[in-house]
Length: 496
Image (tube, rainbow, N blue to C red; front, side, top):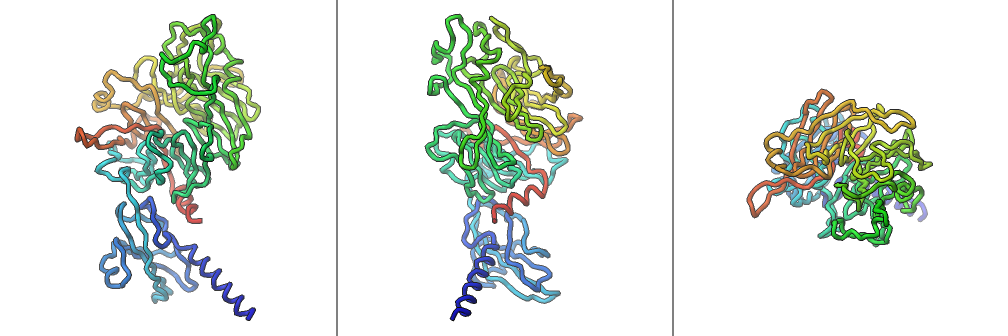
């Protein structure tokens, strides 16, 4: 009896072990058509064939008449695309020993869901210049909530309408982590999910902490983001008429009402490290600033990006409304350098000749700072700026490379008398080219090399059913999956 029971347990465990290797799972509803197919290996097999058909089938004849992909492989897993979203699929595997068929699996079924975000008659990534490099890459366009190939074909969309309720901020900063997961914001709440859409980490529902702009998963498994704090204990709309008088003191000197901390939290959402924006403002030159005749927004300094160099243990914090970058030592928290003009007592407006209203400040592996310069002080077109630091204790930067973002006639018509005041991102790619996302009013995304040659460009758009015209969509950042290894890690991790 015990031997029989033991054998039964082994068989059951073997069944679940084999079944757990089957992806897509039977009857699954998935949010992507770039799929990792995997199945149990057969002991004597030297090769396999995966057959895929559009539709749902349970008989050989019906299935075989509808096969649209037949792929021969030597391993028991494969990444490939199915034709479309909003469709059902049936697949099976055939195992071969030498030239003989040794096993033919049963039929497996799954559905690829759809949404307006991947319906190319509603939302699209219009290619302007075809890819000259990274032809096999994939790009996240966060305002479209979609992953595209470099030809503008959607292959994945952000699942889970519960993460984007009506009235919430559109998802931002969708990117792949070094651990093969996806992080993003929506409604000022950060999430980490698998490629399959499973929520791996999030702030607890009802949590009053408001993270914004930047969110990153660290190599130690923790998370880092910027958290709004408010001197008066609540936030108000950033409208000049609503700014209370207690933002300024009796002499008219500036007192920031809202400020941001940089916080590191662990897997249980406990704060394990914090840099205080309020302490920085109270102890820096900002307390000497006079607000009279100042054109920038004093109500909110608008810290809008940070970059944590985990190797050198420094953080670069970008502050848009005073055109400043602050270099912070981690974990000590002391300010190593301040890049941008400093204020003296009674000073009013300060100009920064290197950048203004900047966004997305980062540090390259070779030690240069680079950023998206909105150029909002003088209503000029935005630029990408690469800068060299002056060294410890110095607060000067040397501009070593600058590129004016290309807009062309189409972009100039869209911009009109407007200017770029918000958004925009730039990321250095492995070959030192730059992936750039421009914000509204002209959200062009492109890759440019050091010789200032555009190697790929596109425009994210949405169709307006009222005007019957394609319109530009509000964008924040773009992220490129540059190589096959990164893609495979992302896809296979979701099947663990």
